[in-house]
Length: 167
Image (cartoon, rainbow, N blue to C red; front, side):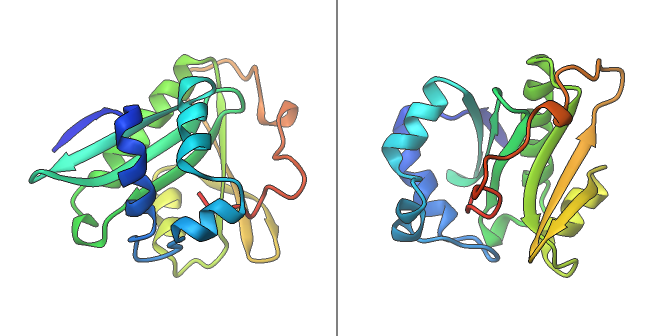
C-alpha cells in the first residue's frame, strides 16, 4: 500500500473512482450537477483542499480529500475490492493529520444517517460522533486530542444547501 499526495494528473481517475464505490456512488454527470468537476476539484486542490491517494497492486484503490479552510473531511472513496484492507483508515489518518497541522482542533463531515451504511460505522469506529441529523444526512465531528479548540466547528458551519452534496 502506497499513500501519496494527489496530483493534478490524478483528478480524472479519481472522479471515475468516485463513481465506482459500493455505497453513495456518484457518476461524473451527477457530480457535475452539484459543481464537482475535474476543473473545480483541481482548483480546490491548488488552494484550500489537499488529498491523498492510495495505490495498491498498481491500482488507484482509494482517495481522500480535506478542506483546510473549514476543517471538513470532504470525501473518502475506496473501490469495493479494496474495502476492509486498511485503505480507508490510512486515508482518514492522512487527512486528519493534515487538518490538525492546519490548526483545526475539531473536524467535521456529512454522511448518510443510516447506521447500516459502511461510512457511518467507519466514522464511529474512528472516533467521530454524531452532532446533528437532518433528513437522511448526519453531521459528525471529531475533537482531536491535545489540540487547541481554535478554530472550532462553532465558527464554521456548512454553507446553506451544501450539507447533502456528494463527496
